[in-house]
Length: 133
Image 1: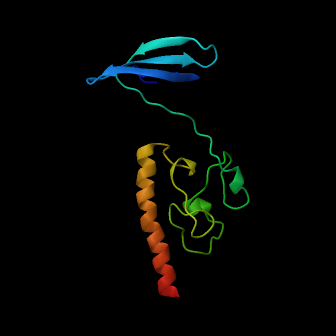
Image 2: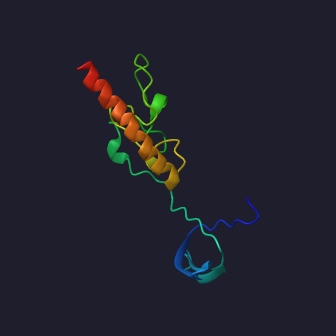
Image 3: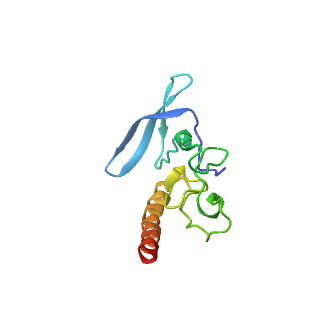
């Protein structure tokens, strides 16, 4: 762990304090006890959890043991076809991006980048479909 990082689990941010100069403190609630405390800080990183809501996809797409959607080569059950695109699922022409994807970075910026990348992959698939038709 980094010396300037505190990991607070089961903690809820109730209020942020600061002026135009920036963040100065946060009021926190311990979810187990309900106790409130004020923590002086200048930076805050929130991680709200990572439980994929994919049970409805069981039997439709390949999911890993934790329920994340498998994409790319690991998502392909058909070894005879060309390697699928990195964001394509086990079902051709179905793509997954963001936190729900197995192996994703679980950060907003990464999800935004994957969103931009999947557009190019979809165009590639649609282009191939129209040229082969």
